[in-house]
Image (cartoon, rainbow, N blue to C red; front, side, top):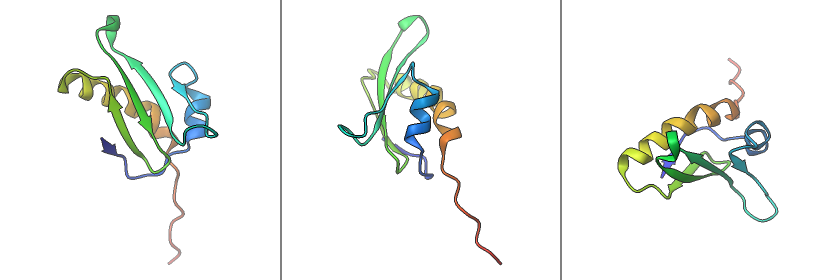
Length: 88
């Protein structure tokens, strides 16, 4: 499990990554990313929620979890919701 600490725009994440993401808010509140390692060495699913919390499933080793996380992070990060800065 992980927490990126910034809410995620799941609709944008899905729209910009249709080859890896599945998002159907009517049936499941999260976006499911399916990732494969080089040469199909490993395959995992990542469920990411608007709260920026996620779960990686299907990995057989800790190394696969790390590889999947670092592969997914650049796909997810651009879709973090920006919070308004407090006026001083």
